[in-house]
Length: 360
Image 1: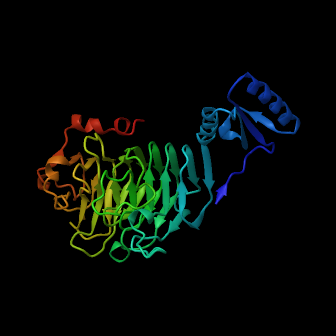
Image 2 (image 1 turned 60 degrees about the vertical axis):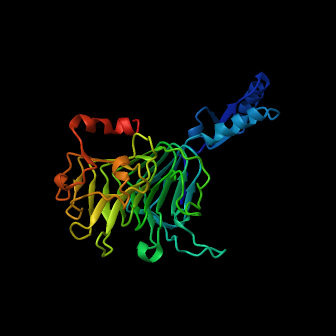
Image 3 (image 1 turned 135 degrees about the vertical axis):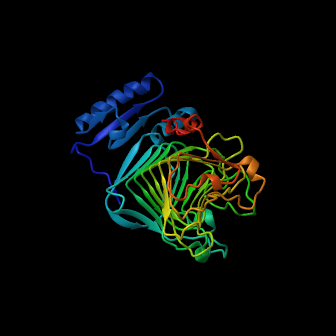
């Protein structure tokens, strides 16, 4: 799956020195011996074939500093076209995955919430993912992430991408699924049912990070983008699947934390699908402080005239924040929106730029 070939035939080593003056002397000697053995010595860890950290083993702080210096080195992985039937997990910061192209580079699996485990329990939502990342400064380009388990009515939730961390970027990626396609962690502060959050971040700190999705295609049916992260979607297509119900799809179900300035922001995105007219909803609140803002989005006719649903939580009318600005399409009917949905002025919409939400 991984192509790590390098341009140079000469193996390179990055030598990192920490500690006292004696370590520096030792490193100079090591560098000389490495060159004599035919290696090139570089200061650029990101381009090296190997990394040597010369530090003091007597001090715990020095050992930890050495470990941190390795785990923070950026790595780029190039993935050739192919259908990779596997589950992938990323736990290391500063990783970039680059697919050959989004249509041809496919990571797929079919785990689902109703799937029985060896102990007789059900797998549950948060152990159903195909791709899992819990890290910071992660990038993915030109990759399809798929959960092929099928419609939620039969299999329950089935996550394609489980994304948690700060400064996560997905560009020109496809995320294909049905119920709960994309989870933008962290989890809500509290679960409603015991055991509802069983999974890889069940006991992790609840820290909402920033996530960027640009030029992505995301498909699903029920609540297929959900979670508590601060997310900016730019030029994405959200594609709702017909499940032959009165309400076929809820595009989003955020669980934004109380007091959090931003939740989900969509700029120049299209909300489409294969559903009959007026049978989809833009959002409903997984938790009552949900925030969703749509800026210059195109809403197809399949979007309900009311647009937003309160999930039978009337108290959310006072606590959630739903807003639109300069949207288009037959699904944009501002005069039919509920009273708790805001129509922004140009000045108000200026608070929801990519720079202000994502930071760059």
